[in-house]
Image (cartoon, rainbow, N blue to C red; front, side, top):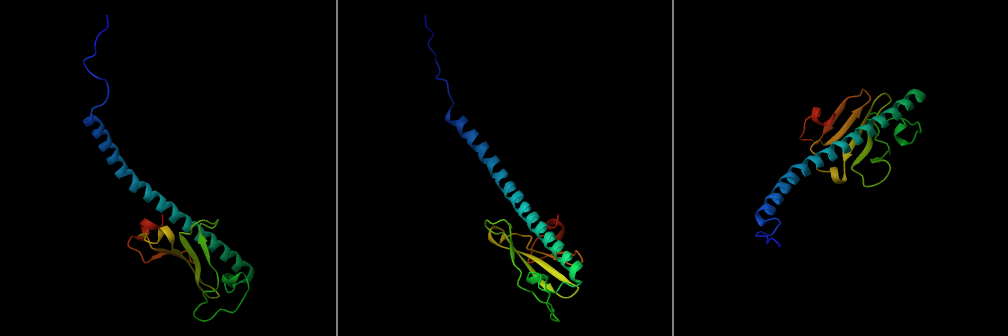
Length: 153
């Protein structure tokens, strides 16, 4: 003889709604944390690019005993008294794709330079602002709402 099942096996609507609520709460917490990790990685890319550019500037200085001309492709020129922004420009990422930082050599004299990574694209509204790096390895930020210690990690 067959036993008749009194209940139908499955989930009730309330159980299903509880599971959906739990998943929604977890997603609401995880998505912003993931976005912050992405922003930190992009900031690290920009900082790495600044250090790579600073390394190139130092190699140029070692060979020519001046920073003048390093900003325009290695053509040694005469620096103006207030510094020459030159014609250098690059983006991060350097391998193509959508740029999220624009790199520039913003000030060059015979013995000094200032490099800048300005926000662009998806990083345009980032709280850390624009990164700067000088010939003395001074790390700075401009147009920011976050602290220097939080941004230059």
